[in-house]
Image (cartoon, rainbow, N blue to C red; front, side, top):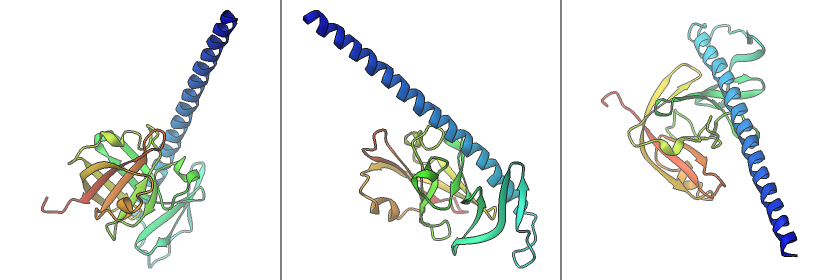
Length: 216
């Protein structure tokens, strides 16, 4: 009987190890897929911004759409927030892209969030660059915000909107908050907040940033 119990325990151990390996492999594939999708979308967002920099003024005639190989991008400005211009790519709306030099990251930012969107790219959770209360959320994929906890006070963050305006920020503080503490994120008093969940979702890693003025 003890021998049978030992064999069962070994089998269970092997099953658990295999399950863990399969879960790790699945998560890695999901992370890689999300990273590739974000990279493809980033190039399209940047292409639209480059095109808009030589387009007629908004008061003049603007084409309804511009063809990018394999995709359709609407370049007619659409206001989801009166203060930010968005464009639609593959049915989803974007407000610009985020650059984090210290992490060697550039990522497109969707105009609104839900769990399906978060699987693709970082999303605006709240606010605007014009009202200095922009909050951007992303999954903790390594290809998205998985390395956010590595950021330090003084690190530079740049947000480029769909009008081509690049707003420079500097990290003022970092920390973690409880998932239920929404107010600490959306009413932080900082100009830009980046956040993601820790593995297991127990807390949220937050990076609080403020605009860099000309004098700085």
